[in-house]
Length: 51
Figure (tube, one colour):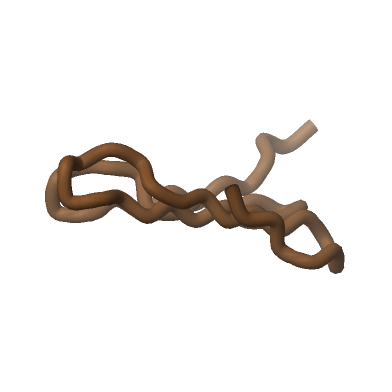
């Protein structure tokens, strides 16, 4: 069995900004204090979910 494809992207402060896998993607946004402010996830053809 082959390992699952996963691509991580990080910003200049080494914070995770996106993850892409074979089944979907997740993006992260950070506030001015450095805390995670927004998460947007998409799985397959389903609409994006924002938290």
